[in-house]
Image (cartoon, rainbow, N blue to C red; front, top):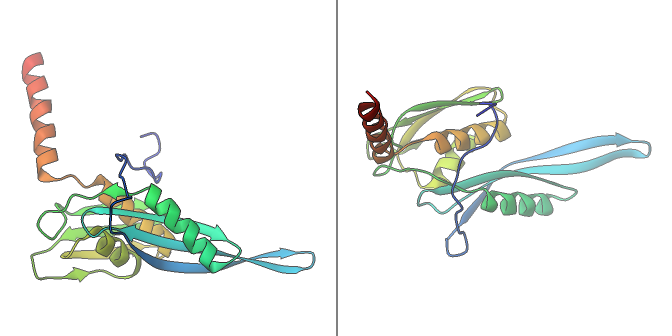
Length: 178
């Protein structure tokens, strides 16, 4: 990756037509633009969508009215869903991810712990179907950036099977060369 801070995650195309998708509005912001005749108001909405079974997406929509901003964000989020590896009811490993000035720490937890998270992180993990995890939002508390950092972190998660297969392929290539 040329720019590690960019909000780009490698993902396979996920067909959302047969999924039971939940939608959660995380944050709505009113933006004022000062013009000659007075102020013009627009709205931005951060929306998280997921099926509760390892697929989640998030997006920011902008429009003149709140419902239109929410609809736009929901449509974009459905197009940009990622697959999240879930081990039992938690995430596979701890991870510290940064997006802009927001940092998000995600840690697996024992079954029965519950989801210890706040705001945007909770919305993303609930939509993904994670039941047990401990999280902490560090740095900026901007809801849009916290959600993006959480999505970026989940896209970087690797299941134990993926990590093992990767290690085996690397060691097999090294033993052939050496």
